[in-house]
Amino acid sequence: MNGNIYQPVEMRIERAKDEAPEVRTLRLAFAHAPDREAFFRRYRVGMFGLYGVPGEGESTFCVASPPGRDYIECTFRRAGRVTAALLDREVGHPVTFRGPYGNHFPIESWRGKDLLFVAGGIGLPPLRSVIWNILDRRAEFGRVAVVYGARTVADLVYKDELAGWAGRSDVELVTTVDPGGETPDWKGRVGFVPTVLKEMPAAAPGAAALVCGPPIMIRLSLPVLSGLGFRPTAIYSTLENRMKCGVGKCGRCNVGGVYVCKDGPVFTLEEIQRLPQADL
Amino acid sequence: MKSLSADRLQDLAAALSAAGYRVVAPVEADGVVRFAPWSPGAAIRTDAVPVNSLKDVFFPPSEAIGRWRRSGDGFDAIETRPEAPKTAALAARPCDVAALAMLDAVFNWDFRDSFYDARRAATVVAALACSEADEECFCTSVGGRPDAAPGADALLRPADGGRTLIVEPLTDQGRDLAAAASGVLQDGAAAPDAPPEVRRRFDIGRVGAWLAGNFDSPLWKELSLPCLGCAACAYACPACHCFDIQDESGPNGVVRLRNWDACGLGLFTLHASGHNPRPDQASRWRQRVMHKLAYAPERFKVAACTGCGRCGRVCPRGMSLADTAERIAAAAAPAAGPAAGVPA
Ligand code: FES
Image: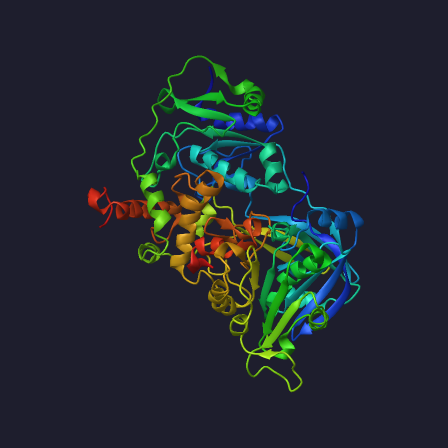
């Protein structure tokens, strides 16, 4: 273990897809096969990586694609210098990647169980890897329901995939936009995610709920989920603390006794409730 | 018993230098005693605690962790290795040596930091037992001692009223160092000096108990009021290890640097969205204290404070970790009567 843990590997942009205003998905192929093999040996859904452009820096996002592909995908919104640089890169250009880092969703423990995904806006990418991982192994899991909302129709990400899921009989998909965010031909629901969530069936024994999205959406969805019978140990989310190193050294992601980059980013609601709330 | 005359530390440094060691030691430049590379002729000062700590030897303020050359739309990575010459760190204080336990832990849990580790492996640490403790010193409150450095490779122990330094090798590396310096060491008995009394004291158990249940206490605001958020305390601290990563670009290439950072600085946790989970100095000072005295002991089984007192010596507003700990200890036990020197 004498390697430089801060040395990223080289990736090549294979595809770039604009999802929503200032939101893009990059499909990245590993420039070198051993890097790809090393990545997929360790990768489990929920883990994150640092995507970078030398000279601009690195930025942390989840890996939005599941295992079993020969590429990885990330979806991000323009927020600062690094994301702007990543948006400037074109298909065929190289970027850098470090990872996978962090813990993962305990999907093996969900075999045979029902799963409810609740996402808002740009909160779908961290759950998309899980959803595809489950769909790839569909027979091993129980019911799969997805409640996904955004401010406006334009802000919904992965529109093609949503259409695909809507057409599947083994996925229950509810899409919604905030009041006023609909277009004349919008066929989904109009209403906030927590409101729409109330209509979902009660949790079956062992069911898990995964929630990602804006803090206000999460906050208002939690009581609804507990009303549906999900206990704090059965509700999962990801923390989005600021990170620099990703490997438990730089101290930036520390909150309470936890290093989000090592102990997270995936936590149960029960674990999140034990952290000092003011520091989140 | 091997020893040397206390005024021959420079000769020891010269012997080690001749034996191929780069020597770092408390040397004076421009009226300031700093832990810095020793060069022939420079006096080694054992009468002052250096303003910087031993940490700098292993974890410098700024260092390259990546390099790239531009090529068309892309860039070629240039392998970046740590600079880790064979080094002897002379006359480091026991509190600085104690902080290596924290640094070793954080740079090696799970992922191993090759930059830190390379210098750690290449460096032999010869500690100097203290002859004096000033009003900022509080090592004995956080598990340390002024006259022992269990993490060092060798200990220089003052003897004969400060005229002699007994050389006590503690590891193989320390024995190698003593062997390399054998020309300046003498045999014969010397009477070790009594360790100084460290007068500043607080009950760390009481502080820990208070920290466990008082995250939302209004005392944090009061404790942090003088804080300017300058981070001088973090940079002087032997156990603080937070860093930032920044890229610097030139026309031909890029260097990625890791630079010291500090949880007391306002930008530390600022998100690109504008949200800052620690928006004020009270929450930042709380994080600093909690990390040192609650989170690090919980996670790494070692406090990230060794009582060196540098924070108190460098703070432009007179704050210090000891002062905070004393006030917390007092708040933890209001019924026990006022502790010495603690304002009610
Ligand atoms: S991101 Fe550096 S410690 Fe977690």
